[in-house]
Length: 305
Length: 314
Image (cartoon, rainbow over all chains, first blue to last red):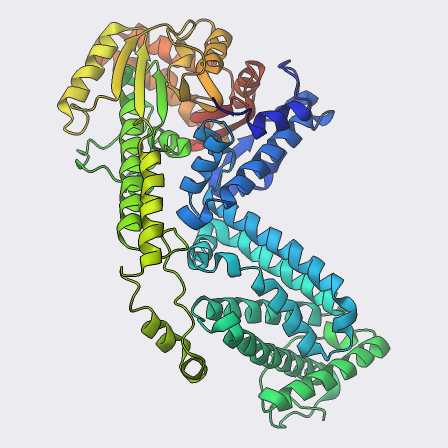
């Protein structure tokens, strides 16, 4: 005898009515890339009034994903995990069709959960982090996020492969960039010029390469990964600083030709100085230099020591 | 009316003989025909109990059955692979992380090297892995104990069913399959119990049903909670240029071909007219929703010539 399914209880508590006139609108499908699936959700005329049916479907999807997470260890990031989850919820496995991209939605569900949890932890640790220099803050923040992968590190290569598929890459990139945005805000960035883009791009690169490194790191407690993370954050912030200084130079302060920053520790210090200088420059000049960002940044920009 | 007339309108399907070991649908290199897309969207899973209505010749039913068998074989192979290769106490099909090497070695060695050294025991000697593997084998054995998938073909026309049975008998992989059955029945009053199927498909059949809402309500009745309804049918052409061309072809060409080939122009005129009087994508989706299905969606194929409607019993 099967216990009453969680899913059916969710539907009942959301107050689904049996009358056919009520909405069956699945608005969420609208953003599921019509160019790839071509599927259109049907929204009845009455759907504007009640989102109850939508909410119950969303609740069912979340319940399915949450239940499937328990089977990822044994079945991987796969439709099989979703099928087992559906059976456990007391529904026919055909209901997995509610998740049009199947296992990719499972991967993205976990990634967005990790993003939310990481940003909460970083916000909670704000006081501790505030005293540290920028690259240490950034490295700690990214470490918090990377540590959340550790329960599934064995199957993470499969998850990344799924996220990299053409039909899924736009969603996973969106999650990656929202993570980077959140981390920069948490770490105290409030830039509104072109550096907004360079900072996020650089940190996205740092995060992605470090997570790949982590896949084959067998050191106890992933300590090699954390060291690599710190190196990459330093390099990344130095690169960002040199890009900024190039843009600044190209925007009208002329004279290039000085040697590029020597990477590593020297770069880290220069990165911090550049941060400080850049923010004051921006506040006084009102971002005019950034607006004049035209030429391709080259590595041999002028360096203001 | 015989379905082959639809060759004029549908894309021609290649008459390839499928290999005896059916590949999973996603790796089949077939042209994206409407049937193929229908079965692909259905995402067949092991142990699926499927009903195909008004498809007596078995086109959709055979595809679904092959896909279900392929999924079952994949699951068996995955279970065997993870059971026999001791994948570690952590369980699952993934290579476990080797335990940390001694500290002096670990510090200096490159991760790959340390990984390589510790991974030696992996291929199958760890006792923890053996225990985990056995437990998992029992677990997946329990899953494998789930009844094998079945497909039921239901049609009101016994002649169509007979053609389907002959085709099945002629196919090497389907002739001995006990999971395929042919039942005569009316879509408006199905001879099946409530909640007895995981999925229901009707391909180019609901257009010919007199009482479509009744057929949709019956579909809802025989589906299990969570079950999926899918309907492949002609629909309204949405691309502007294509619509005129399609109308011209339908009314000027098809009845003439029917007259020449089958000596029955009137039936083909009826066919074309019945296609026109069928509700368009949104109207049919409304009908599906009124019958009680939720999460109703539709996908237009070939510029709107056909559409696949989908709904769930939630």
